[in-house]
Amino acid sequence: MIAIVHVMRAAESGTSLTGQRLVLTGATGFIGGHAAEALHLAGADVHGLTRSSSPSTTLGTPVTWHQVDLTDQGSTLEAIGDIEPTQIVHLASLVKGARDPDLIMPMFLANAASTVYLLEAAKRFGVGRVLLAGSLEEPSGPGEVASSPYAASKAVSHIYGDYYDHATDVEVVNLQIFMVYGPAQVDELKLVPYVVNTLLAGQAPEIGSGGRPVDWVYVKDVAEGIVRCCTVERAPNQPVPLGTGELTTVKGVVDELVALADNASPANYGTLQDRADEVIRRADTALTEQLLGWHPATSLSEGLAATLEWYRQRHQG
Image (tube, rainbow, N blue to C red; front, side, top):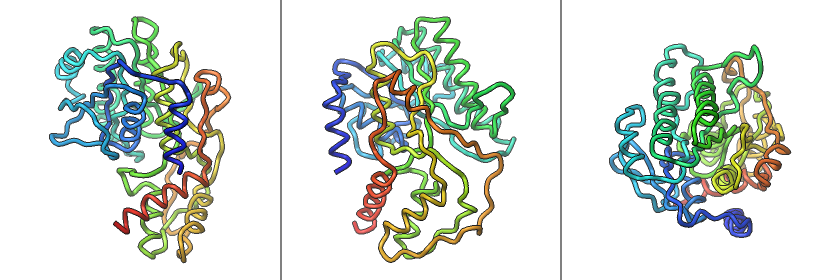
């Protein structure tokens, strides 16, 4: 039912990308797979850039694939020059929340350098708009230090995006994406798929304290927000929050999933160590409404129920 509602919302919103050729990086990933579907439904001709020799989206959406190493500037420039897109949606990212300094260089190359190469390609080949996927973990105020190499790489990408937006003809939109969950999450060690799969296997999830408050946002809402950023007439000149504006603790999410699952074992709290320096931040949904005329539509209860049902059907299949 929720999937149908999202399709109807896209149709009713009047957003259309018909006649536009879009490059989408990260289309084989979790958010990227849902974004590919939403962009396709909005009428876009979607071209995916990927290292994979046999790519596919998580939802099987039709995409024209191009095998490209985004950490190589030459191949990135060649691909954008050949495709001639009207817009680029850059979702590809190396995502690791570890605080290990050994991750600095891999994160810089995969996240920051690839972003600059795409921005430079957009400048050279007249791409009108580039969307960059930011993170809730990015430093947001004076004196705030990045909590991880991942957060630092996203902050650097954001700074370069702002500069290209200011100094070139490319419109750059920085997306501030909060904690995304939903069906077909590629990394099944993330909290929601881990808990769901553990419960469906008849086992008790092992969790830390569960006390961290998080702004959880359903993946299809994020995909629709991305479409709106591609179709809005005036590109927002400040980061666009894609979240719900509501904080729910990890324990609150886990307990709700336990309640939704049939005869599920309660989670074991305190058996894992909490990660240090967790960022607590909520989306400014009033700002998103102002910038895009849009807000997320899926409640946490609806989204968790839909997610659990998707995984349940996959287990039964």
